[in-house]
Image (cartoon, rainbow, N blue to C red; front, side):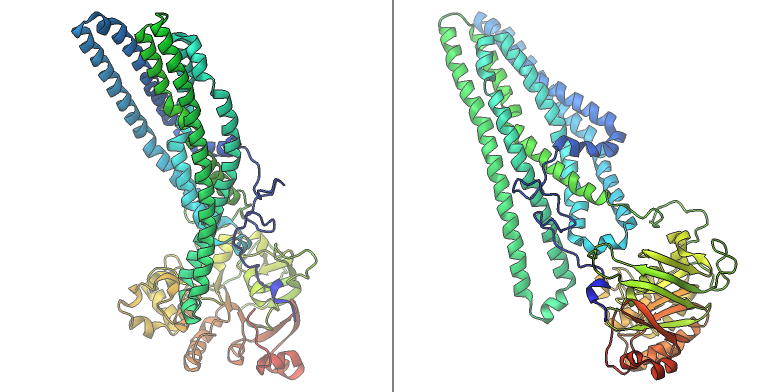
Length: 640
């Protein structure tokens, strides 16, 4: 018997930034942090394609903010004129005029900052929406193997929390890194111009602050990335706990789940506290050093005023300019922190976007591709012409097909090896095998959920690799082993299998699946909402709706993965009787575990250790093949 781990997709893992085997973990730089050294600027520059369409408004907003910030530096010059002129001369009219100038400058500054906010709000909301839509469309195009190994919570956090963080960065820190830089430069020039000796005293902390901010940025960047990864893990646990609430309650595992959740929240809390300590440290340094310099400048300035070397107005203007520069200097740490968080969010976003997508994977909203048929509207009869040799056999043909999961160890045997099988046109072939033999993997190759690593699959003589995925999935309908339903009505779930189908097709599909009676008994009939994952229905009801979804389009090729496993004996017999009519008009491959399901088929293929061991009728294999006889007698039951 084949090893089960080689025939099923690898389990999804939670993100551990220090685990090099994790697909979501970044490369360890060897500094003990478990996280990479990376350029914040280089990471943020990757946002340019999304920002470019709104670059004019963002540039205008930045220009407006610079003007507003520089206006605050004009106020000290007005104060100097006011103190040395009207106040010193005892001129009330001049004082009122100076007060008016100050009021106008303050109002102008407030209006300009309001205009900046108005300029960026709408376009940046559009940038966030565009990035979220691009991520969703890319996720739809990624191969199934990608989703097999990535935790869903990590993908959710990248599409929600990380994108909100990027929008906040583009709204405030991106602009104010420029604004505050220009303000500090302009203010420094004014300080030196007013009194170069005092200006040098005030500007003396700049070099130490630059060094300390560089150290802070490196440490905070690693902590920010770790926080966002841990938040993704936490999202995964919450999602799994909600979806698996029946298992948790049924097995009394709420305490163990609570412990796992508590461990993750404690780890996240520890990282957040580290970020808070780093931010408190840099904020304290950015406040203390300039305040000390300001105090020293005040003492020296006061002495010079007392000696008559400096006017009182100049000292007032000088100190007012220094105070106006307090916020730009103190906010450096805060802005760097947000920039590092945005850089980490950008890295996480593009980790998913950089995954190679399947080019012809159909996605909602795509332009139709020439030659593709709308999903679910393939006609039931007639061969698929073109793309293959004229003498190629019809039906479903596997020729030397092999498959290995992308994450399988290099020395592991392939999941499928040298599969050669011909399902004739209009024939139903049952696929039987022990656990881990590769049955579900083989059926997943037909609708191109995976592509074979070797060999060839043809549909009515046409190479499957030459058929676009949209067209292939219009020709092939699938009922999976686990019947997944969506948070929608019964009708919407079934009609998902045939876009544009009407009420008559819906009733026929429900009748084939023996679901008509229980659907009619629901509170709102086929309009009843089934809830998330369809958990408001029984397992058998979900399976019948999944079967109805598969047969509603009257597909040319039908793949059924153990479609009757959750049904009682009486319902199973009714479904089988109705299903025979559907199978007579299509080419079908049915994964079967029970003799009753096998009897639906014209022939049976026995899959053993990833290879076709025997093909024949049910009675022939019972007579001639001991392994098949053991499986059908209940000696061994398989699910894959």
